Amino acid sequence: MPLRFKCHSLLYTLCLWLLFFLVKPTAALAQEVQAAVLFHDLKVLAADTMQGRKTGTEGNRQARAYLIRRLKEIGLNGFRPDYTHPFTQGQVQGSNVIAYVKGQSERYIVVSAHYDHLGVKDGQIYNGADDNASGVAAALQLATLIKQQQSPRYSWLFVFLDAEEAGLLGAWAFVSQPPVPLKNIVLNLNFDMLSRSQKKELYVCGTAHYPKLRPLVKRCVPPVGLRVIFGHDTAHLGMQDWTAASDHYAFHKKGIPFLYFGVEDHPDYHRPTDDYENIDKDFYLKVVQYLAQLALLIDREL
Figure 1 (cartoon, helix red, strand yellow):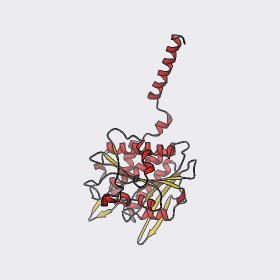
Figure 2 (spheres, rainbow, N blue to C red):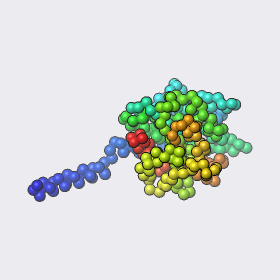
Figure 3 (cartoon, helix red, strand yellow):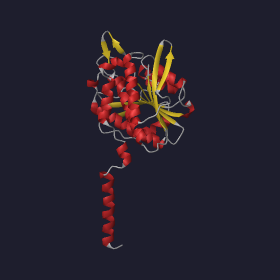
Figure 4 (spheres, rainbow, N blue to C red):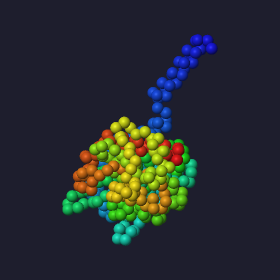
């Protein structure tokens, strides 16, 4: 080949690489987390006006109404016109909120996050910013992301569970009366406490039970400054085994694989100081960016 043609070919290749790195493709743009919206959702849900979102209270109903409004804004449909999934467990009356994105398959991935918290005790509001307004706001971001995809491989359920603090009651109600057959649910991604960690660590719990998920999770590289650690899912850990610590346990008991994402306890856990002002915004944003990337990877590769 003449030298001039080799040079032209090399120049053309270099231009293509520059375009690849400098111009984001549509798929990459769709992966971007809307930081301002993320923080706004968390701040609204953790505001004093929500009165701690305890199941059965006016604050809990306000939080539920906010979730339904946001899901409509994102463009998700509900199985019921009002998006609710009411349940009664003993003396507790609650309501999950469920929406979905239809994909190519009748198989579903469930993203779950509980929206209730502890309410008001001795005149103090337990706002539950990290526990679990952080998980709810992250799930709303994933709902936005999956909705933006032209044709996801899986169908996706976004389930905002009530009465987790009362014993995972919303999760038990969901698996008892699911909107789709349980056999069609291939995975539960559960978010509970995502927004602060002194060690900058996010734990992934579940791969000890479902080891085939581990290589897929390891393929997703977290942002610089975020450590993603497998663990808290083996029986010998005792109280540090998180297998039954949150709503994913109800799915696990039905034989549905799960990945639970959360942080270790911090000084404000289940205290009235778990406020929006105490979250670590930089850490939280990186966590949600990581979860967004992982969700798309799971949809492609699971």
